Length: 221
Ligand SMILES: Nc1ncnc2c1ncn2[C@@H]1O[C@H](COP(=O)(O)OP(=O)(O)OP(=O)(O)O)[C@@H](O)[C@H]1O
Ligand SMILES: [Mg+2]
Image 1 (cartoon, helix red, strand yellow):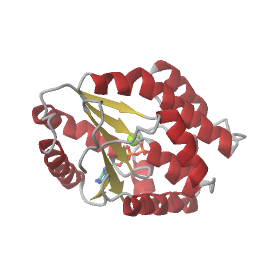
Image 2 (tube, protein in one colour):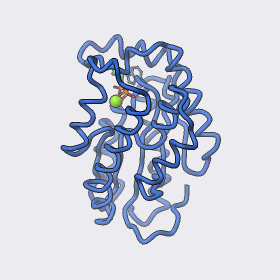
Image 3 (tube, helix red, strand yellow):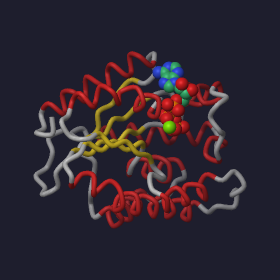
Image 4 (cartoon, helix red, strand yellow):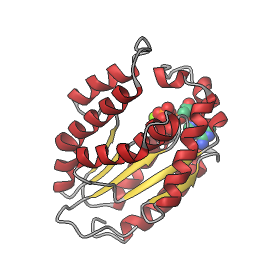
């Protein structure tokens, strides 16, 4: 989990996991505690979106009427949104030495468009590298939960709007989870797996324990 030596300051964390794992809920709950962990500002943001241009791309990706969307079109739209968000928001905040937490990043492309949709994962990695100039998060929290559990949580949440990707079959979601598990295995120094099947308070406590340890090791604290 040790940060590679770069000229960049700040600390960059991504939250990953299948739909309904609890990423957004956890991010909201840990925010007050995180502010106590670091002297800099804490910036939270999300993908796809986070800045006006990328939010517009998000609307195109998630529109339930866009059933004709080609898998490669979808991949490229995600990557375009990622590039804009990175340049306009993430990099400037890191340059200021701030702690940046993003709800989804590159691993989502590999898990969803690679494992889920079956596109060439090597091409996905290359395209993402091109778009991010090789930037990876310093730390990735992977919230692991069985697909059935994640999907049933979403189904129970009446406030959340159902988007195009929620309508995908269970099988696709299971492939996505397999993708995440493979990524976690391949990147043990960057990705920490959190058991997201537990009650939310326990997931939040586990997350804070991982973050406290990681940030303590960094000068950002
Ligand atoms: N540990 C948990 N136990 C039970 N319910 C949970 C837990 N975590 C989150 N939830 C509930 O599950 C639903 C989905 O959570 P949330 O939106 O945070 O997931 P997410 O990972 O952000 O999903 P998405 O990828 O679709 O944005 C919400 O209704 C939330 O209240
Ligand atoms: Mg979410």
